[in-house]
Image (cartoon, rainbow, N blue to C red):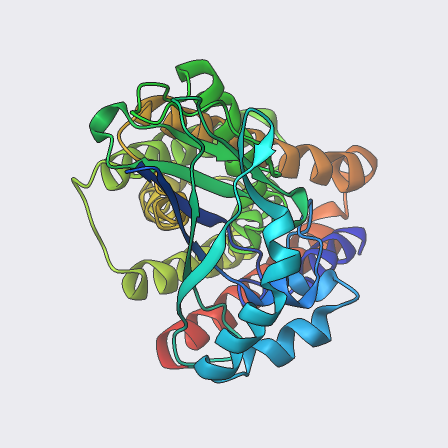
Length: 368
């Protein structure tokens, strides 16, 4: 029953609806003016949530204020953002030689409410006068605002691109471009992005990996499945990120849920790994790779150091999967994996719960 406790603990965290989303900041430096355009879920900014290290807005003590803002019509939320701008502008600064550029809020575009349980992306623009000279600009993004992808616009392929996983300051950005984030720095910045998409954000991917774990405690079958899964999702993640393959999330997400159902049910019906199990896992891995690509697109990789970012994200995903397996082994497998009653009393009940959750998600994603 310990395995059930592990699974239920994972399921206790709401999936997707209140996940913290990264922001995208477009910076234009031209004609003596700095223009900042930000695509962000602004409700947490206004509500005063600290997004640093937060994966789900429901975990914040100020989640109720955030939810009220989610239900605001566009005009009211726009006014709330304007009212909050004096404080917010202290958390979003452009620095030239250490001195802030005074930013004045301009346009705000807020979508209609739609489903209030899902985040909506607001775009707001602010401008400020650049001091004379050619001193570079540094973006200073407060950690409480969460992660942000930064893109320098109007500088062609030489424009700066970077990702701040937990806020902080960007590298100095020349006004004419030419200082893109280095390859190693880009790789490092996207490893935690991939890891976070598994631990703790990727509840569906966690359940799939747990389904692989509960089939057998023998290392060889587990490695065969994980290797097949890794190879497959690496392939489709790369193809989708490069724009070679594109499949609607309306198709991918229900099929990912179906893959969770399959591994859970087969765990119960099989005494050992079937010859076709690695092939099936390989096929499902292709689907999960498309799911990863959908998330990765939110970060807008840009053209600079594209492969370094892609590889970094994928390495982070692998670390996350290994962390799931290690946690399951240390919590359950190490203590009970060799017991004669392990399959009947731990692996099978846990697999039933996994399959049931996958079935619920399938119905939800197809019909609701």
